[in-house]
Image (cartoon, rainbow, N blue to C red; front, side):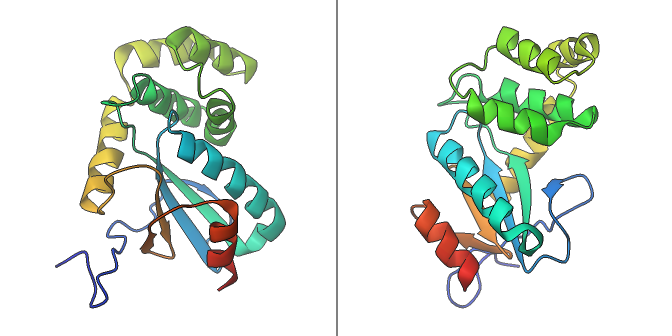
Length: 179
């Protein structure tokens, strides 16, 4: 099966699953699946746009985030993704997700441990899981799924299962959600 329809539109082959990081109702008319990287400046800008739009649209928008660290370009992206997963294992994925985007230029191990402490996570567990690479495989699987879905850069955004290309500024994303 091709990942392109008759209009050469890239479609999401991997539907939203129970293990995905999801914010919003499954009944929302709009579902945005993002493959992102915590060091990517465009992902950072998109994060703030999506925060604003979800606040405005509430029940109409469901966000799904999948880690897609561009490790060849962003030295700390993989570790940051693993930190988000470790926080998620303690029920605080979205809180860590926000902190990582707020502090995109401070993603060294010591920084991540400080954020975990600030969020009230079990920091001994968090440090151990980072050291052992507990979530490296989960992050790798998200990355591979992104590649299979045609993602070759970040942010990789799919709206209701269809890949959105080009500049993803607030005006463009707002326009997509009003159609």
